[in-house]
Length: 561
Image 1 (tube, rainbow, N blue to C red):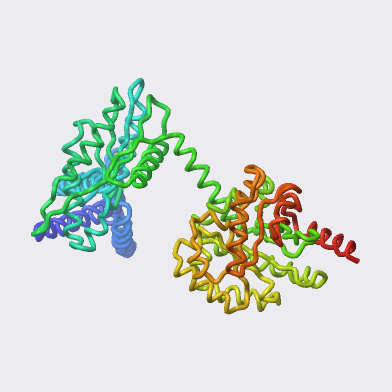
Image 2: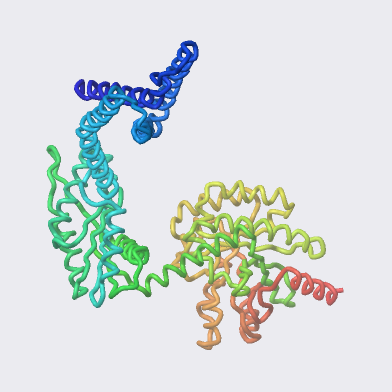
């Protein structure tokens, strides 16, 4: 280090000497040109020396930014000397020796710079090598990184010709738990061991890279048989399962793998990576610890589901839903005594969609509490307007399983009751028997809380959920809705054993029965014979928008008048 500093100082001194000597040569005629008058000679010399000092300072400063500038005075001095000799003005032996001295200085400067330049080039080469290594290598595992993989994959896909190229993405299962339990040092050792085992299970021309975190990728170029990729993936997963000793603990590395295989050229790296990633997701969904190939049909289904999810989220944000209402009639006179609120999706491209087209997906995405609250609020606002002209009209609104599990359900219902002004006893909250029986004790607790608000509870699809009479004694139910399958069975079997039994159970527990799915006059007549008071179904009216139901209620009111 000290020797380098000394050489730098020597080079700077030589550079300054070369600059000032060269500038002195340029003004040589003014310094020693044999001027006639003594005062003029002194002035000329003073100006010449001032030029040398000022120009020397400017050149040395410029050389800091443009290194070649320090050689400009020397070049000009040589040209000046050649010009003077060409004139043969006898510039003299001294000037000649000055030029020789400058040339010597330049030569010495270059000799001094040889070692420095060579060292600089070595440093630059080493630095470039380090940068290149960092750009394409993962420092922890010494594997290639994502950039290196992409570079290798692009090259492999470009020269695939009639062969196949396989990409295997491997993800360690439970790696976070290892970090949390044993620490990051153990996690790093696990990653290094994984890298070594991956390298041990591939060919010399294959590429193994770490994509990041606990995710690795293997590139198998120019394979003739697609089963090779399956073999390599399964071999890697088996090898990773071999126990790893970390300190006093023994850990097994469990991993999942996704495989994508393409034939020939014309495929992009992003395309193949996306397919391998989809296969990895499938391997995770199938229980982890396995390898799966990319399945185009499954990918298409996943793509459709993702599109539907995005559309559904957008529908809730843009309020593309609307509420339709199906009348519940009094079988004695078939007058509308209540309505059931049923949500519909006004899809911008597919038109009006029934609940079966989107409710399951909304439940999976956790959107039903939000959607259900909107339906409840919207339907209650509408019911209050109808009740101004049709006093006593009941409103039935369905509750989903996720709504029943919402801790804030009671507060939300109370808020809707207060905000809309609907009489609590004219609001009937329906839940299916299957939902109620999922956790009987919890369902009973939530329903009892709702009952304190004054609302009524209906058990929908009664008889389909394997309920027993003891369940009816636990749940605070006011209404049972006889499933449409039992109503339709009355005509198919020529009797009414099941429907009649359900009606008898309802009477025993002092519950109000409502028959669902009544499709014709024969079914309606048979229910009257069984003393069923209320029913709903296509025989009476299909679900309809609020405006159409308003017209129906007006017509019925006119007939009563």
